Length: 552
Image (cartoon, rainbow, N blue to C red):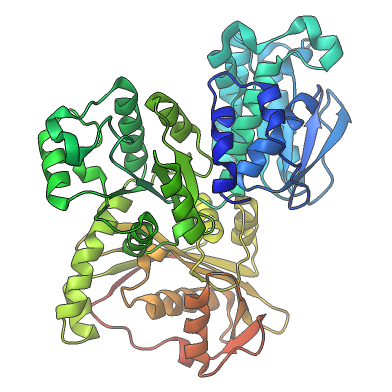
């Protein structure tokens, strides 16, 4: 379902007070197939499950859910379940004292985590009071230390709804103490905030219009001083600034004169969104779809990694048709509703810290200038002064390695899409090795940029099962050294010298396949397979301009 197909859904999906009838009127189909979620429960989940389809459709997630029998003991799921959701009403376990309840929950959840094959989602307690607070603190501490665990924060939903979070009068009929409002908000939180972290295509950038979107008025007609910054528009700008601080790249896309926009941001010191939070300015008179494409090129990402915000539905539809997969958000007259929708929008990063990305992207302009002025590649590298850090089997980096695997599209050879638990098993396997690569240069610290996952096969070959390099590292003429040195480290750790690369042709991983073809000196025989490659073809004497460090 395309973004402009669901433009009319946004009022119902992002409403402050959700309405089940309004959601049903959207006519969303149950998105069966795809990801499998097993719900382990001791109270009813049906009131949540029945509200999920419109939220899942909007988020682009296909999911099939199966429900366990009611069980206060939290029975273990079948091995290799796609994912598990623990949906427990902990108030039912009143026979346990406060500490015993927290200890039992953590112990039992650890057993579930060991058995589940994919991500584990745990709904915490929505109740108030010290008993629930102690339990939730224990769950948060355990989740932070455990691979591939995400909390479904029912306590936050209950706090937001207050007394309306519970409906004990209807508990016998519904099978749960949670009210219908709590069920609807839980469905939205699950589909918009929790599941996209593991399943959805991430939003890496936001493209935003100016006139009647970030303020009330038209710059070319009213001038900077007569534009109105309403409380709602100020809230929207603060949301954009907050996402920029988290590392989401911001592009301003506007039909205006460049000089007028420069004057606007110079004069309006009351704007919460400041120019240094904007990584790309696409100001001019062409189609908005072309502006999105230019911003995507500047950020070295695909247009479907963008969320485009505009007050003109026609502009949204034009851009959406030009770029399938582009996420769209209609900026309503009530700007506070747009701000609320942006806060909740699925796919925006809610875990991790990527705050250096805007600085890194801005540095691309200077990197391009260095490349254009350098006499040759060696001169370019000396001017850039890159530093590559290689870390072998880094258990503390599993979350970032899983993210690189899931979110890298252009330079990803096998498209395996590992989750945290799979990364952890790779790190712990004596017949496997994982190399995490970080990159910095004299212009900016790019941070974590690559993951290489190698397993020793029965015939002694080191098979690269997953090779992914972030788009932020591409274009700096470092791909050969990143792959070559990472694979050399892994092969040495595994005691082998023969190498094979698993590959699979996807929608956007042509750069990775082209790299492999160049190393092979010929075309790949099929859309997927295993390509043997000699160590000599892979490695060479690296330029002394590139400094290498290792943590082995």
